[in-house]
Length: 273
Image (cartoon, rainbow, N blue to C red; front, side, top):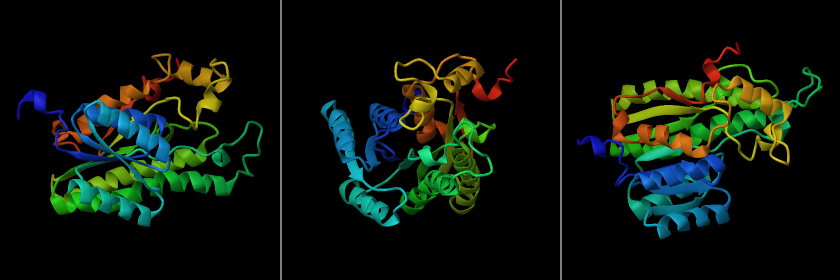
């Protein structure tokens, strides 16, 4: 294979859960730019359809599909629709996830009276929202005998981040699953199916924007703490995740599995002094 083909996603059909989110928007554009056919899977039909239209109008290939990552029946329907149209699924990006308001411990709140239901909701969204799509779409890759699965971790799984315990536990569980699935799948299918993860640092999304920035765009006290802990002294830009994503989806990473690529501006390696 020529070096300029290593990162190509030509003729590959890639499913992106959470494809209607902020980070998901960069994921789907990046995959389309690399020549892949991207399936924008999410619950917001208007956003999914608009993003698919933009990609198709610009010469790419995209399809909007409605599904809930916690609803296996809806995922199976989505899988069947994709297979009927394209005949294959070559990759999966488990982009759905994030925090929920009920799982955020408010300043001054009693640490021994946390919202357990909210914590469970965040844990379920991030963990089972990764495992269930992997089971549904991964089975297609197993039958085909080739594929790449990319999970989304977080720096909150690497070091203690105050107030967001439910989200942190969910991402830590994704880390565990990422390694476990890589080994178990390799034991059964050899090098045919790879499972890896991206570990983003702090990127502004719908879930964290109010925690990190004020309405005028200035940093909250929490936002300032994040910036101070990040050697690059800024938040990440969603497009800065695309390089790592394309690498893990493409044949360039053919001998890589069970790994995590950090894209965090140095956040996790900085000791603060």
